[in-house]
Structures are given as structure tokens and as C-alpha cells.
Length: 241
Image (cartoon, rainbow, N blue to C red; front, side, top):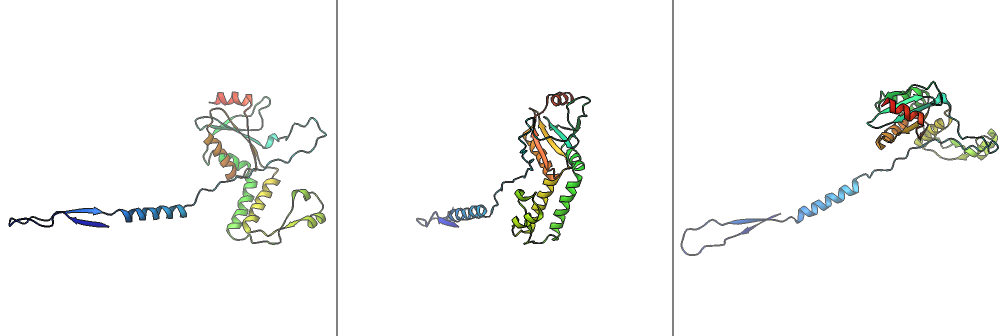
């Protein structure tokens, strides 16, 4: 709102009449009210960032205490893919383990879709195809509500079918719950896909590690871990750089 204030209300004597001078005063009160309303509106309608959780499939705990020479989980060399991360956005990879000569070749790649992602997709093609097929059916509406769907606990998984039917927990699932359950079961039962070992040196950036973990989710890798570089890998990485 604007208010006009007259500066001169008259003149003295019979001289020439002068033009009246006016000064403008702007009332900012409505503008302040409007700004407060806008700020309140945006605060109430803005969607705050939600925390994202990534599921990691861990190996089952080995309960065999009789074998004292047990060294933990044994990783098949044929399924192992090692990803070595270094500074300057450099990434290398190789298959198998560098335990003894002849060592597997260390290959250089990048973080693009034709780089490390292509390597992971080619190695995890079967599981990736199955998961994408489930997601496609869900989008097409081919996965319906299944209130009689039975979820079996791990504790009764190895029992007979009759015992499983007796102890099963019957719950009502939504389509997305059913999709998540199917994907989780595929990841858990996967015994052919790659096992990825992510290793970073002292020059690697935190963002590059996040990028690699994102690639694990994109390519549906069910088993991966972040571990330390071995002395042989450090040597090969230094020579490659």
C-alpha cells in the first residue's frame, strides 16, 4: 500500500501559486505478511530428503565349531571379481585371486555404463535378468495381491514340507512387498553370480567408493564387500599408475 503525503498545503500573500510537492510513503506491512505466508507454505509443502537404505546379503554364520582349522567363509576364485580404486578417478579390476604366479591381468576401466558396469552386468546376467523380469511384471500389474502368500522363517526352512505348513506365518502382502520378497529370495539363493571385493588405496576418494556401491545396486550384485588391498595388489596398482 502507498500513501501520498502533501508537503505544502497553501501559500502566503498574493504571489504566484506554486505546485504542491508530494512525498510517497510505501507501507511494507502487507509485503512482510505475504513473505511470511510464502515461507510457511514452502516449509509445509517441501518434501524432506528421506534416508536411503541398501540391503546387503551377508553369508550365513558357520556353526561348525568342531573344525578348529576353519578360516571363515571360503570364496570361490571363479566367481571373484576384484575392483581396485585409486586417485584421479582411476579404477582397475581383475578376476580370481592374486595368490601365486601367474597372476591374473589387472585391467583398467572407468565408472561409465560401458566401463565397470558392463563388466558387472556380463558377470551377473542371469540374476539381473530375473530381477528385471519381476520388476517389469510389477509395473505391468501382473503381480496381484496374494493374502494367502506364506512366508517361511529361516528357522523352519530345512524342515519337512508338512512341518513348514504347520509353522508357516501367514501374512497379507501388498504387491510391492511380494516383489521385494521375491528379489530378496533370488539374492539369497544366488550361487552363480559374482562375488565382488571392493578395495581402495590411500588416494581413493570417498565419492568413488559410493559410485562403486551404487553400481552394485544397479547391476543387482547380491554379494560384495569392502576389504583391504593385499601387498601384491598394491604393487600391481603402483605399476599400473
